[in-house]
Amino acid sequence: MELSKISGDIEKVVVTEEQIQKRLKELAAQVEKDYEGRDLLLIGVLKGAVMAMADFSRHLQRHIDMDWMAVSSYGAGTQSSGVVRILKDLDKDILNREVLIIEDILDTGLTLSWLTENLTSRGAKSVNILTVLRKPDAAKVSVNPKYVGFDIPSEFVVGYGLDFNEKYRNLPFIGVLAKHLYS
Ligand code: XMP
Ligand code: MG
Image (cartoon, rainbow, N blue to C red; front, side, top):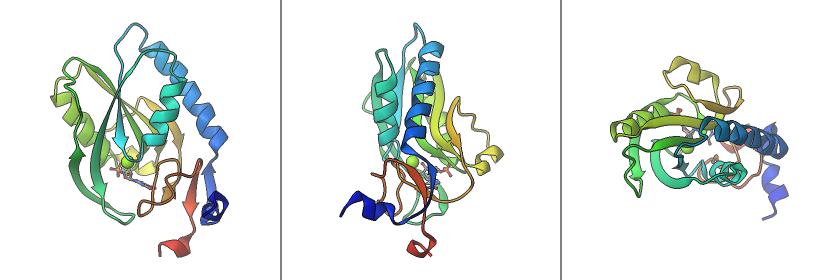
């Protein structure tokens, strides 16, 4: 299947490929400054953050360590279940490490508040968050991402790592899926 065919399932583009790359480059410059002379361990949340990790980390002109976790808070649909489960844990100990969580999207905040607490309880020296997207619902929870790519309306989006039933992750932009495909 051609990528242009998949793109046809997108009702509206929310963030373009160019906008994503420009913003990640800006955030990387900010992170370089903030973490100057400090340790930096990037922890990507699988699978959604794969694209963000790959692109963001390549904008960083410094050494980093990289690790991954997989957690699940969503089922196969578009509604949050409120249950967070570790599907894949970190490979290494994070005691005294300076952690920057890389996430695709902050929605209700359930996932990131749980994850922040979990990593802090393992003795990390610091735990900050970089999220590519943030939805308005995130305002209701006590998660304060230090780095936010874009604030977007409260619509279900796909692309750039975000999926609908595991599909659309490979779109280089972020968009709203045509309603007829999931209703
Ligand atoms: P919470 O509600 O815990 O959600 O902040 C975070 C996780 O939920 C998924 N999520 C989405 N996935 N399009 C998606 O493809 C969306 O619009 C969306 N909103 C939330 C995502 O896995 C994220 O890590
Ligand atoms: Mg995710």
